[in-house]
Length: 219
Image (cartoon, rainbow, N blue to C red; front, side, top):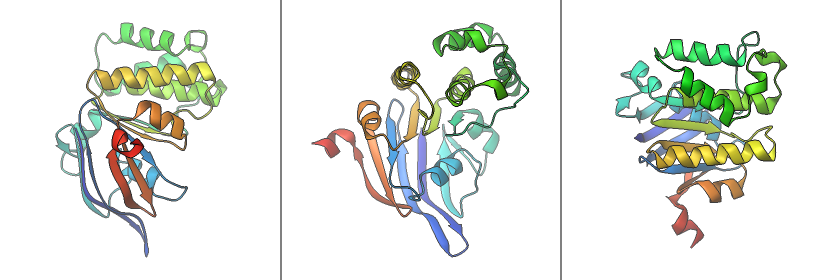
């Protein structure tokens, strides 16, 4: 479902991501780990179509990101570590806007389910600029889930969340993977990687230091 081949990203003479090749099959959860500056966020932003690769290919849900960007992106949910929301739009309006952009019909029931699941009921009419960081994170995840994408990309998804929010998101990621989604999670929390991920990719200076199943790494 996610296939990356020879992915590179250069900033002048600096190579931030160096010849990455990996894939994530349906139902797998890949943990992307490494120190600060290892290239994790740059990699995820390239997969989300925010940054253009210097070279290499990205295939999402059967679509080449460079050749069919709209089809690739329409099958991908991306949640950054600091969600860029529309400050004046409410929780409900964000979900309605997402549904409109992705041409979803009869989305109201699923939107309500997500609002309930992520404890946003009391905030559904609150503008985004009044939400805490944790609530903004949960709203971004709800918007990503609303389109039911087969590809999900999370960059530090637990930022600003309380223990209940963390548990909700962990359970939701497991459920999405069980339903067949291909998922990538970048995190500094090794305990979360160990509890959620089926595979691990360790980056160092933009290079693949280790890529294997979590079972093989642990054992």
